[in-house]
Image (cartoon, rainbow, N blue to C red):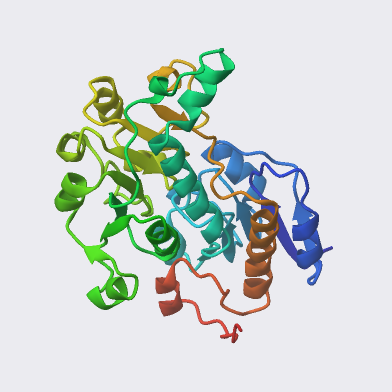
Length: 334
């Protein structure tokens, strides 16, 4: 009988070979048969697990209170909004994620959505393939250089975007109450409040985690403050935007367009009006992906589990308050 049981609640990858190879360092039974969608399905699959790998399945307080032996929950991704951090901390369960596996990918995707929206690439491609060879089908298009990119959040990904955007001639502002003026100055970024950012920016890109405080951060008020030429980009989490308010703003031309990799409901429902708006570019929560980033994510998420089951804090610790109740060894990470 294996010493540890590790359960993966759900996944959309074609192979789990990377995880198996890393978990094989320990005496582990790796259970991969589940594709959980509900709390009860997670409880049934993982109630006796020593560790959980999680992608989208809900790890709520109810689930956590029904985990008899769990020591670590390791999530595929940066955000941990699928997991009740407070409940896990109270039970002395480590929650880990992977905060640095797709910085370039998400930054590049956000910029791709911005450029495609600004240059009307999708619309012009569609008209051209219909036999309409006419640049006027994309008017108006505005020069990028000198325009203002407003970044909501200024962590690793938006910092990466900033460096690339400035090379394109964009002026960058940011809203992030947790970032110092000194860090902003390193990137040549002006820190402003959210209202000012919404009023001044030509392009707005969202890069904050989804929490109870940030849900609906961009709502009717913020949308009403934006320029009529503004384009809204979201590669973070769908519920950060009040989607019905954004749809109304797009339908009334309150804002000019949007580039969205994430939505309130994923996959997108067939009756969502965004599907029929030519000024909106949609991608299927793909900003994180490259062949390289997927391999990096899978390896780091599995290593988090090995670290904890070996008695160490993981490199990527999401609930730091667990250190008040759980004493593990510290490992130096190069």
